[in-house]
Length: 377
Image (cartoon, rainbow, N blue to C red; front, side, top):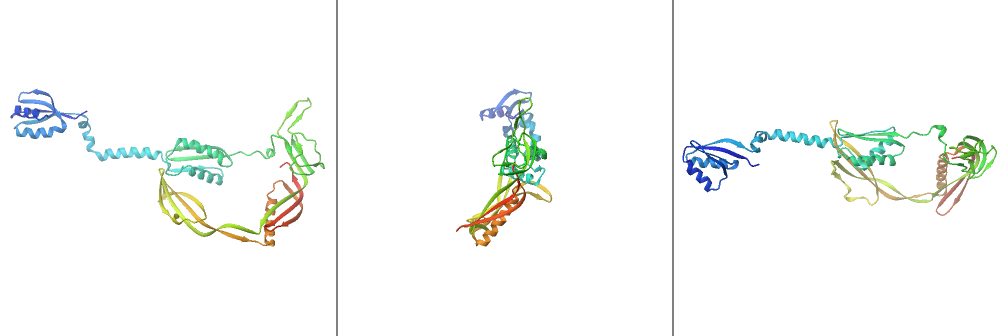
């Protein structure tokens, strides 16, 4: 709607003045005769020109009424600072309410907490990023599938704070740890020393010889009524066995080792934008590995919605590690000791028999362990 002004002209040469306005194509409507002149409506932008022309014709001109939206909001527009401030506050309130200012991960262990933080960062969920509901759902499912020992996950975003609460999986009770849904078979050849059948059917006896793959406890059996019953078998069966372990160590081995030289790349991230403030990777190493760390920017204890990413590149060079037979054999024995200790099925060892085979490339060490094993594992 155009802004207009209703004005009145009195005295003077008002007839000549009106003729002049019409001849020069000034926009005039609602022209009416008054006692001492005339009244009309013109465009607001032409009123000042018309008022100057009226002076030449010795006419008195007076604005009677101002029509249009402009005149209604004119007083408000005079206070531009207040309007701008109010609009800015509303805009910033909307923007910052959708920006992640802080991420809190509540998890039962430190490993789970670190894994969740890393997964969130890999999905561009960091302090200073926009919150996205669809991405929030996808990341929740990724935490379920990619982070170990996670039983339940919630991701809530409220007033700039993203809270991720992770509940650990509930492990089986000790008396159910060895329960299985299928038959229990032997993992080694041996002679049974201890036999404890907690659930399932078995006709084994202490002193009986069993072979690898032989059925030890069945998950199905016939009850006294001749009906087929199925259970989750659980048993502890200890047998005297002989198990052979093997490990190999090479004489000459090329291993990439860090030289101590590093390069850094530091990037600030906010609102999906990246600002590189330090980049030393122009002369990148030919061989390297890298470590990525991220942290939040704080100024005087106040956390800003900006994330600082630091990537450190470590130079590596191929180094030949040489060993003679004696050194290779000693290394093989250390590895063998670690492997045997890591075997959860070994209950107690009675005797160790070592043998080795030396070739041009290295040493292969064999170890026969005589002892008691849990053959259900």
